[in-house]
Image (tube, helix red, strand yellow):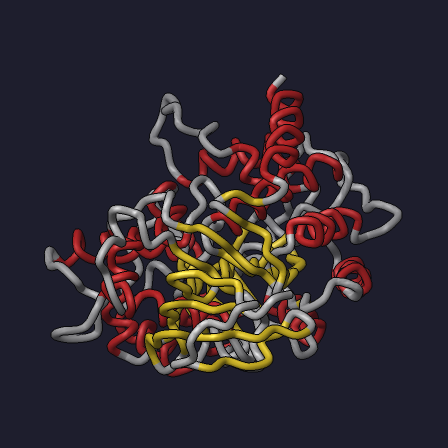
Length: 452
């Protein structure tokens, strides 16, 4: 690919002018600041690093907006979940690939260059494993391959309907694995991603509702060097049932009984008391926050200010994919804190600091840690994941430095991204993924059939 030149770029030390970037074999080979553009350089104005969505359930993109009619009783996460189960029971492997392909193209158009796919739709319609136990995972790999997004695939272990090993119910039959089945699934998943450059595999015990302590201990070694993700404390009901089962809150139980460290990512962790918040921060684990989904499902508001005050690390995810965008998640995160604390610029980190920059930097590093990516950003050795912003966008005009991020996150909406390179390949240009039309057509045909 040609050498890239940016009039201004966000590097790990901060913003720099006249930045030349050389890419070799999907990786940034060299970054030089203060260098005038050469005659063969591809020139752009504003560049920032691509960022990870650390938590995605790709198949749920197909049902976005289908659970917005109130039922006869209180409408909650638990009633939404029944809609999700019904939708999941209808999908074929081809459907999964079609939905994931559009989703990943949309992610790239909105500034995500890597996805952590928390994948739990494993089996055929009746719950029987496919001949290839990683059939569904293979479709996720294919969607990542053809769209170009970086992939961390997290096969999920799901065995029970509630705490204490309760039997699963019929709506969960496509998710359920024994320990032996999950070991085979994980091995087959590793084979599926082997040929996809930069892809890696971890594991995802679904939650303490779905996994017993013995099962958690048995599957943890299957992560090998990869990350471990788990849902925790998303709903008050979940916390109450965990206390009834164990005498401990979910995050509290995990910190006492599981080897939670820098390799772990606790998804949501919404309902924590102060001691849990501090202990989770001290563990080094990442809090995987999905503010748009957490708002959509009525989960609650994560104690972000307190967690950051305790030196905690967070990343962002798109979870149910009801709305896809880096700025949407970061803006919702900050706005939730403003509503909770009735203040502004809650997560800026201190007087005179940019809230946009603080949010972006923390989510970039937290997402990288959660997906086991040792080097990210516009620097030598990192995967060449680069996003350019449209300097002519009205919300970016005249901005420099951190004001660019503030304008992008809090004012620009969906139209500010121009070009995206993922693994050194230009995949989005003029704000459009190269597969946008074909991916939309296939997705629309798929969803029309599922809706019928």
